[in-house]
Image 1: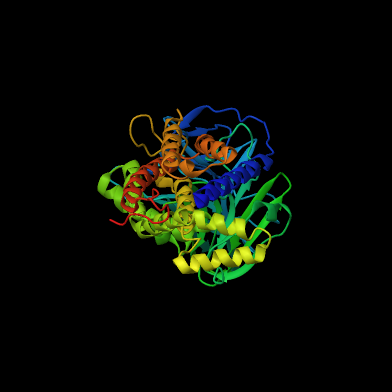
Image 2: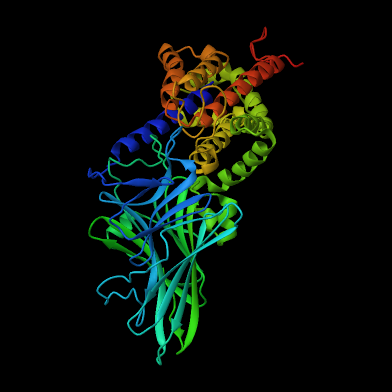
Length: 542
């Protein structure tokens, strides 16, 4: 089967390129260790030597630095740091070797966070631990700073039950005789190179999800902004109404969504200590004498859950990184979610989506086998033409094309289903490594995380066995050249090695797909009866 042999060679080269690409990636790390923790508040270290407050609802645990009121640490209580770990996943952090913070404040002529001030304002609070109670749906945490002129700045953090969005509200009371002018800003800063002491969700294979900055504006609904651009001082400067800015990584995101009227400036900057910054600055806000003004913004700190993010801000759900095949991965994920809601297990949902995809591609598979069987029958004639016109390549090509036209055969007919299946395969890969719902999702027995590799490599071995059977019942029996036959015999082993590091959910999909292919092969070969008849040319029609 010439087409299938070419496909395996193409796929081998493709996966080899991906492995080479992975080896070529450079990683720069720092090795300092964070120290001095006294006790723990819901997965976050409390450092007694800092002025901090601690806020918690049922899904988030935050540490606020009272200098400026920045969020310096954030843990996601429903997500584990690692599989079977008792610790929650820490998304934001402030340590000697790594910084990931969500900052906000008021700048401009009368802003307390103005860069001309010696330091950030030191807010105060009546207590330092705030927790959403069982009978509450909303938790409001106010912190206050009063300027020398008597202007009262009250910054309130608002957390809601079961929600990852945090409302930041400034209540400014102008007790002076002058008009106050200020702008609100929100920014996210993060150390670009992850140190060795820190782990982050990632995959060993070359097709990795995006880690970096992103933004949305009136002209670009979603645009990634790589750390490389920021570190090379190719800074973003976009003026837009509404919009948002974000820092992204696999499965999780932090995003500022301005709530003010007027235009915002979206920007990036690079700090000398290897820190990338993306932020926004609001239009000018005026507070009249002896009056007050409410200034708001919203911050998302959490998993990339598409429906919830879409409800928070337009296009925020696009931060789920499905790569360049997002237009296939998104509908596949929606279908997978429907199956999960019915079956209650992501693994069984993958099994059923495999059956559905094989059913959709059935007409193409049937066409493939018919084309392949016809091509086999024509091999004696093609061989005769090659021998007859071996001296004239142009005449040789013309005679073979005429033969195809006469027999009404498309020589690419056997390759079309393969071209369709490859994007489906890759889109499933992106979906498995990009959908937080599949992070640490169990299947059965030893498979406790469908988004990561099989810890015992059992599924890849089973996949290799199914591939071996496909080989035995297809092209391998019709290859006369011993070298080509040995290469084809090695293909299942080579692919098994490649699949050792693939997400177990993807390997499961491929196993089920191979099993269906084996059944289809048996059925079509029996139906078409491609074995030679007495004249060696015509198939037996049944």
